[in-house]
Length: 303
Image (cartoon, rainbow, N blue to C red):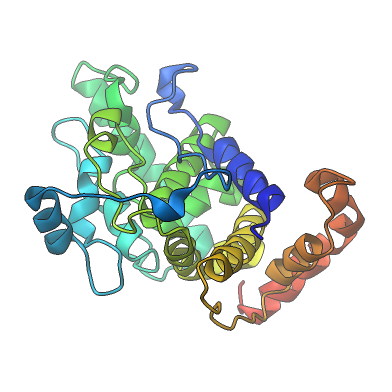
């Protein structure tokens, strides 16, 4: 039986992390992840694709089940004269570092600060300052478009104290969108999402397996120190396993040396949703978080 409480919790995490573009006030510019309901009889749904859709999927999808980097560019439109190619490329390969280039994390953060300031100045000089072009998150994507996943995490975690809360939220919004795209969702502008065909075609086990693979390949800093990463990766693992069993498959074996991830797995495995919300349940584990991060810092050989 699918762990509905865990699935619902994961949906809550997703909604929490779909952050609005800071230039848009309170208006969401991106389509959030779809609701994952275990009450729907999805096993018997028959999906018929047009020849055009079949050809598009065959062209865009790699042997791993995820699409080529160029496929994701349409989800990250930017204002004219700016590129967001690195945001799209990170969906297909979150480990790539076209911006970070394996520099020290503190140096990546300092460089990101300079890049953002330059982008803001370029927009101001054009007569349309940041926030002027509000549709589809184009200004957000233009300002952050050079950043790889590691640089985005430097901003989201406010490495070095260089970034405003709005900038941190914008980075988190992009990171959440990338995760949704990796799961096969059309996370992005509504006009694009409406035409999107999920390559996993409703196979939730495959979708969460792809998400887990995506999270496993983000930067060492994110995997070692991000509580959000650990919570989503742990929830994704257990949901993948439940859906695989529901489909009559044996989940792939999994183990990890990541102390923070293992802490959340332990918490999920001991959680009784009928007795407490997960956040309340996790309070008994909170005093171990700092120790787990310290252990990971050593494990990942971080500065």
